[in-house]
Length: 421
Picture 1 (tube, rainbow, N blue to C red):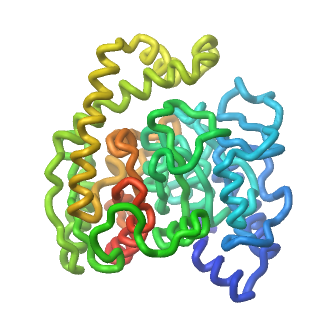
Picture 2: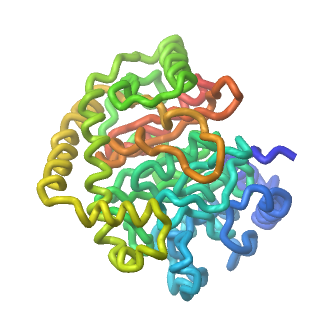
């Protein structure tokens, strides 16, 4: 049995609406797939597949979904991938983001694996698209649960590259939401300036179905969107050249993407702010470490009980000087209006979602470097699947849009996905 078998949310919602299936049947399908492949994938924390009631109303009524285990779900413990939280009592209430998904009709079937406190120490999860290769992190369990068809929808969070990179590695789509669009109450975060919500589905069209259900928005773009989202978009092609590190396969994939988009009618031009994005990329970890050391002060006090990567992050953050922090924040602040101006004239920035395909081995989660700048700027990002390296492993392309422009970005990402596929 193939482990990599995403389940289309769009098709499920269509079938539910037409009466071709039921919420109970959808849950049974989820349970059957979990039972068949979870021993190999290990996407879930504890028992999955037993919801506390099945939703019967809302546009996603009956849709099974998973919740990253740094996000509160009423009646379930929030363990954060850490032994420090192993004995925590169950949460008393849903985080607002979980309540919003429930209000849209989604049914929680379990908590998904996260790296320790959403940083770099891997959990047990395997990559369904590339067994023996990392699924990425920190939202590894959510990405894997969607990639192997356990659920058609799962939510995560991103502070550096925790949603985008796992989507790229696992061969599914993801949306990182504009920072601040939804409250972060009930989420155990790392960096208040950067923590953002995100979610996974099989493809960009599935993401759009989920977004419309969550927000009640129609297909028309919100926020600055100067052209019809159904028309070929005006694209800026970002190569990440000054950052470096791209694999040959990813460079070739990006070149292929640019040519295919242009051939399909898109206006494709070179991204003019490569150096600026490299500078913001360098500023991001300075701010993140500083804030993490304070946000996770209780854990820093018992650093000897943490993984080496997290302990190092907290030590580095505690040692960050005020001058260093101010310089990093100034770099990010100066970049925001320049990016806003570009995205007022162009529809989308398209670039590599990760340095390459999922690295072999399970003792690390890969490098988030190509997500850091966009996360620092707080912009919405879609990971578009559909390209592969020479070994047949997934390669994701990321599409970046204007703040609060998720609907338009998703429509353009669906167009891009159709062209690349």
